[in-house]
Length: 514
Picture 1 (spheres, rainbow, N blue to C red):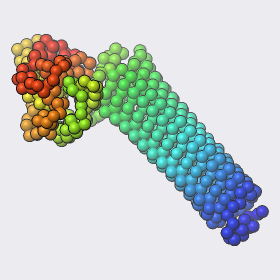
Picture 2 (cartoon, rainbow, N blue to C red; picture 1 turned 180 degrees about the horizontal axis):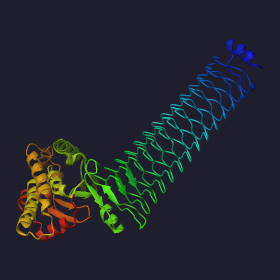
Picture 3 (tube, helix red, strand yellow; picture 1 turned 30 degrees about the vertical axis):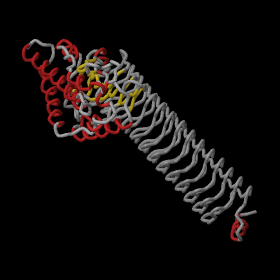
Picture 4 (tube, rainbow, N blue to C red; picture 1 turned 180 degrees about the vertical axis):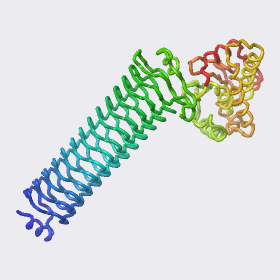
């Protein structure tokens, strides 16, 4: 059968041409929607600008075939062979190419949006400026492929192999790249914003100027990678391997940087304002002359280092936390009230924009709040007590503790605590106290009912960035098993033990202040 016979039969209503052999045929510009060419041989043929919407080409041979400008939307190309084919500007939107082979295919400006490309072989394919948005490339082979300026927004590339890929200026925004292979990839100025790169292998990749803001790089391997000038703002770098990586002038503001290996890495000029950082490993070869700690990343405040030991002292800081332990499990009703009061607090102050981490056991509930600076811990604790019936007693204990510190600094000019501590410590606390007077806790309605959560004894701990703890308040009956509702009035009228000046001084001496 030749091309003319195929067209004639198609015009007669025949659609199934399974196994047909039409190598080197010319079908330029033909319209054959929904044609069945399963297992057909169309090698070295010309199907440029053809309309093959919803066609079935499963297992077909299309090696070195011209399909430039062809429309294969929704087509079935499972297991097909398109090696060295010309697919420039081809439309393969929502097509199924599972297991297909497109080795060294020319696919410049191809439209593969939402296509199924599971286990496809695109090694050395030219995909410049192609559209792969929301495509499924799970376990695909794209070794040494050219993806320059391509768009892969929301694409699924889990366990795909992109070793040696050239993806300069490509967009992987919101893509799933979990456990992807990107060794030696050229990813300069590539957009990975919000991408999932957990467990990705990016060893020796060029990520200079790349945008990795809000990306998840947990367990990722970046040894030897070039991250100069990259944006990692808000990124998650937990257990991330950065041995001998170059992070010069990278932006890590608001990032979570925990348990990562920085042996031999270069860190000079990085921006770290608001970064949660601890558990980091350094070596004698780690290079860092200075870093930018200014709130806006404009180098108005610089931290300089002359000894390797200074890096460990500066970087390995736990997040400053307030921990409130409630001697009662959290009920669904109490949870709803706690969320409502938390919403009120978030509108009141940016200190409460991030809700607490909640841990619930059969006996207790632990609420953990985090804050960027140690000086804000008393204010955070003061506001966090807002939903509880013992808030007046607990807040008074916090105010009394800070008053002790103020009095100490006034009476003891030789104190190891800096006098500059007073303004931020008392200022944030005063502002929070004033603003709280305008609110009424939703939880107060529960205190009159049968739910005991907000009436229960509490313990309030401040945990600074050096991981030193200070129990600033504890209800008298905290930890004591009893029917708490029997005599709530007596408990509330009995004051807790005040924190001593010695405990306060030890705690604040181990704080690092901006």
